Length: 232
Image (cartoon, rainbow, N blue to C red; front, side, top):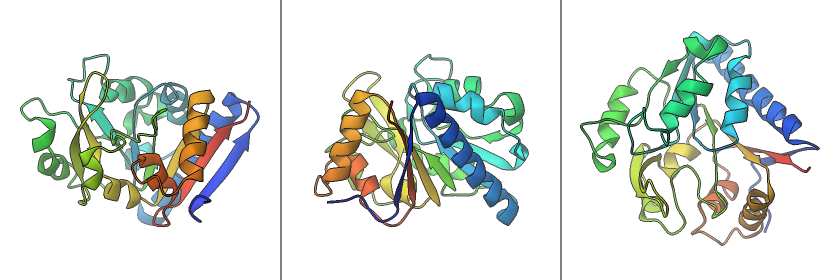
């Protein structure tokens, strides 16, 4: 079964070209949204590839004060912890020209992840929501953000955030719900490395695998998905 009609693949001969293509795509989407609405929002996650993507995106010419950055998911650790996605974003994305962007994190010291949905939405009151663009990471097990295969968080049907439990530490997580991700105007994904290629093709070829979060992203027609694939 092919991926949804809204999925577009972009193939590149090297990792560097793949990253450049992805950065260019995010930049174009944000620029167009600012030109049409005066403001744009971007949700990003953590992982290895964003360490290459974020500095290049931060150097692009954009009306960054009009951009609101938030997270797709967070490990429930304070920002000073090296496992924190917020720390990664502040270090690698909210620098250079993008230092003037607005940012909303997910971690709140006085709350646990299960109590944070309303608090998160309240802090986003002046932010375009759901995000216009979601730069979505996925794992070798086909999890996206912090939505895990067969996890109860997959059944959340509200547009917001949900607590989840990861199979590896730090296990306590918070994530955008699937409806929140699919309410965005564009989803951008990068596929690089053998394990990611295998996970992507498994999710792409089997639309019946509803327990795979990545398959749910690829086999839907609500939000356009742009997949940047390193064929090196």
